[in-house]
Length: 232
Length: 232
DNA sequence: TTATTAATTGTCAAAACGACAATTAATAAT
DNA sequence: ATTATTAATTGTCGTTTTGACAATTAATAA
Image (tube, rainbow over all chains, first blue to last red; front, side):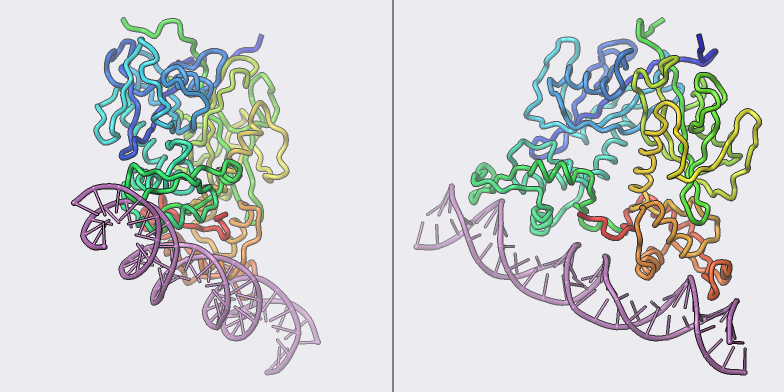
């Protein structure tokens, strides 16, 4: 029997930065850690990679268990593997960021942990290197969203341009001209205008749009230049 | 003593896709694997992550050992973690892609393995999921190079626009108009024109350029739109 | 009926893009 | 010495994209 003799073995975990949007601000979903060390401290949603699953599988499993959602947008970010990052035992963690429709989230599915949404800028200190993970995830979200139409993943099926506009501003932490934004976003050809209007936000009301799934699938990997002044 | 009881432990490795450019074509550096299983089959440069190093450290160590180079451009790609990807024992591998100046590479530093450059399109079949890794790396290289000035990393300190031009065409597998290319690349402001000319390629000779290190450092993370027809 | 408010459509000058032509600086051939 | 040749470089120009800003529209509230 061949084997890799003498090499050290490690625990491998996944940690998910779960982003949501409440209509005004970007939020992340945190949990109170259920095991020692650092029990009851706020942390990212995570778990160990089981023997019969890939890290991607593990991340999906964790998300399903903690949010009740399946098939959410999930993207591998990077691996965190400093030898001392976990004080108990060497554990490498694969960081993922997830985008979910905050309204689909089912609160408190499980008694094993407490989960709570925090404004991205008002989150508590997290355990280990999770603070760094959140910072990295935010950066990557911004980067990705500037080029690819992924922010839709945080909105309901039907959404308005103004909603999308606020979300873009929130993610990029900048002001975007309303008029140019709506022209640019509609010119992607990814949106289908619906007859119905959302009247909660204004007197005139804003038309609902939905994604053109077909075009979305085809263009998900395409470059779109969705942010103004992207170039140097 | 706290511990994470009952969780499985795995081997963690790194694998590097090393890209080089010989002036005409994109190449990758492969090695004949030195251990069972699949001994003497071609594979990527890799190694296990040691107890006192991060995956990034490990990748740099492997590269140093096998190419003699330090401080090369190295970027984490993704983790490969299918349970059965290594037939002997579960091993997760962090994939990296590296860009090196092929002329700096010192051949056969070590007798423990054989290393050889292959044209990217004429490479042999590789072990395990290494073929997939190469495909992913190529895609990522193309993606990254379209937006960030990283291809310089594969050229000597002094290089000409035509050299850079061929490299861009090679990476993107497309023809780019010579005239528009040279205007676009110089307009980035990242290049410093030297007095000297390279006369090997033509009668007129092409001016050498070097990188403006300062501007390069400042703009490395900036978007540059270096490829024509990038948008949909 | 009018004021108000937010959504939407319009305008326009400047910049970027990309297809293509002309010029230039050298060497090789006559 | 002159000319042909070759590849590098600089130019041209109509089209498209960008982004700053104004005007209009569709509703509700006063």
